[in-house]
Image (tube, each protein chain N blue to C red):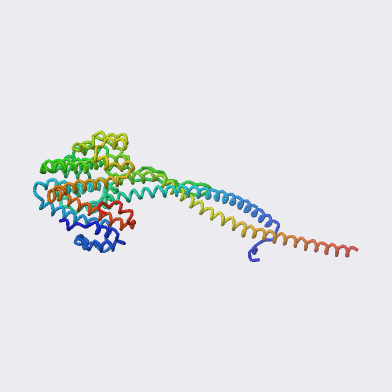
Length: 206
Length: 331
């Protein structure tokens, strides 16, 4: 068994291996807990995200329809001149947050766009719709990033659990069995040797 | 003159172009070929807009040049001055937002200066204050009086409102100097043009939540518009009660503004254009080959240019015909 080369079939080594196996099994249990928790978070997140996305898509559709109407009313040059006159832009700060070791972004709005120019009323309507969606869009983006990272982490955790359960733990168990068998074999040999020696000594005395 | 105009059927043909290349080919078969030929094959809607407006400006200049002296004052204000004011707004917006000179220059309508000496000095001004300073000594001098408000609140719309006020005053002055028999028509045109623009301005700044809202900036614009009582502006800007405001308006402005109750400003603009065309067409029926006809011809040229730009943009954005055709005035 190439996988068990370098193994010392001694009681001390057996004890070490059993200790390590116990540690790995406990770690595997924790990873399973993490996996289950991440799976639950992911399921809930996907449901919420689906709902939020659908709602936002409907609202975005209305906003784009208003923007299309504005461009058709004003012509692209005038529409562009007006839209590019908005001075104060959206400013966002991105901060890291963590859940179960999964890092994801949290966005904080520092400054919202402010319109202090004359937008044609058709464009003003589009602007109003888009501004009302800004916060929702940002939260959805946050949520999507979080969901993606959770899914990613779930995949990694699952692979670790599978690797531990299907490869590492069985390997350790095999090693432990080999060592135990080896120790038993040597014990038996020792016993047979002792019996033979005892028999020989008894015959000499007698 | 009217042979230069595209018929409804020709416009419909152009509107049904399959793509930009097809649009270009169809436009090349019209009087617009003179300006279309200069465009590259991969021209976009914004390039077509420049070309279409170049032809429009040529037509406007040509017609005003040969128009009888009595009519020139009003035509000059209603067309070239209006376009010059569009350009001034684009320059002010560009300076306000810190845009570079080339970008602002590229956004201007292709128009010779009318009341200003040149666009270069305005484009090279450092900021909005510089532009307003450069306009002193022209009809745009009153902008200087609004500069303090602009500085205090950083509200560019205050200067844009003043430009509309200047336009309204010039229209009134031009109507006064026109033959008496046309004054009622010209005042009606002014009411619909200026009245609706001022109301939409009030609605727009209230809608987007401008930090500084002052009805006293908008009210002077409506000085000569009897169909719009000044308190309407207060109702819109201070209380946001559009329904109540519409109830105070007189005919025909109330009808034109009605779609704003549903938030449909595009429909208001369309009704405004339709009402103006109808007004002038009725006047033409009564006095053919007179001032109303010249006015009708130039309005028709402008409407045609706007519709062609809408078609170009609709095709550029791959919008279905049914979507952008709703915004066309002449089809």
